[in-house]
Image (cartoon, rainbow, N blue to C red; front, top):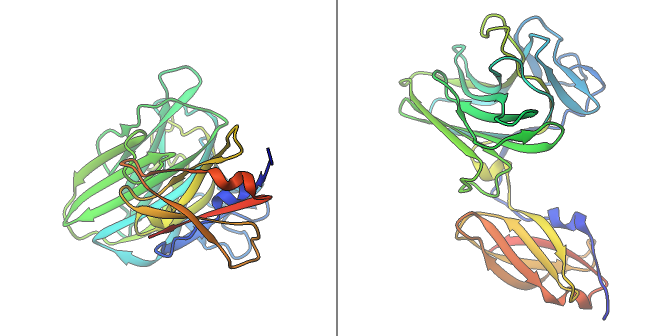
Length: 304
């Protein structure tokens, strides 16, 4: 039986013309304070300044320091939604009852859509949650291990004074309910939202006994909606015993996608080899039986 080669990197070549990123940040700066990095768009939100650092191309937050930093959105909003995603790796657990470390902020100093971290139910683990502005955080009931990298997605929706914050961890799609938490709070109209930021332990906001551990963050994306920051993509590849390839992807539930393949990434000649409809959780499931007959296969998805 002829064995073909499938480049795993090709799983992440995808087509999604609807994504509208407002901002993206990969923290590719020299080690040191974020605020003084070359061409850094970040500013201090709560002093003291220059305590939030970049370490090896990642943002580092620690419960032993106090500064918060923020990015000013290019356009403010008082209604509608904004969504952010980022990679999170926790290397030390939070002190006390935990604390919040990421947020949207109104120009009037209201911190909204607060991403919370606290200790898990199993020793040595942690949990993530969200709270809109007040009350206790709603936690995702999954214990996460330190050292692992997770994708975190935060959405803030404003509807005539009703604020709803939603948090996902490693979501397959927007409709994924497995690792999700929601919290709504009526504040009333009038707030204008201007920033997204990251926070350490601020004496003016926090009980110093409650920390957020040590966190490394990367690949920040800010957009209007979920698919702006978590676009259509392949998520895994499995080589089958018969030489075929089992592909899994993430898209919008109920949407049908064409699966395309090429043997040469420099070519514009992509062959449609079939289609698949994302299930209720947004999972795209497709088997390419013909992969066995190609010397190499690169894949992408395109909505019909």
